[in-house]
Amino acid sequence: MMNKIVFLDRDGVINRYPGDGDYVKSIEEFHLLPGVIESLQRLTQAGCVLFILSNQACVGRGIITQQDLDMIHQHMMNQFDQAGGIVIREAFYATAAPDEGSLYRKPQIGYIQKAFDLLGRSMNEMSDVFFVGDSQKDVVCARNAGCCALTVLSGGFNIDEIQKWSTQPDYIVQDILEATEIILG
Ligand SMILES: [Mg+2]
Image (cartoon, rainbow, N blue to C red):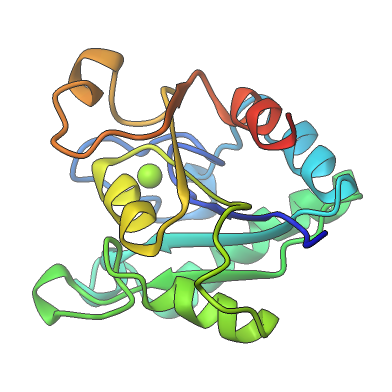
């Protein structure tokens, strides 16, 4: 049996949603959400291959530098390392501004394709691939790639807003912990 693959959005799933139109601009603004460490440990323990897939147009827009983004990433990884038992195969950040037409910026699936290339897997075999996000872009990206889409309520959108989206997720869950239950269930 092949390992399950889990793509995780960052803001609103792993760390606190920074607010509409805002970004995590420093490590002081990066706050892990409750249940994240436990979830990532359980997913890792179960043999899931974990990828983080995050749009960070703040770099392309010149709001923060690539170096700032790298520092925030390192800060996050340090917390995972301190907790132990968490393996992130790769974190992909799409830094292009929305008007640059990047094939890597969600809902485009460039980084999902890249992840599959990395694993030497074909994108035809998608029955055990999950995408946990908080935005409609995440759901559309998951759909575009053929992943099972889970939307958490710990991010930028409440249930009423989500239910109005033209593309609906497979599951709406409270947070990453509940998403983990479904993925491992
Ligand atoms: Mg998000």
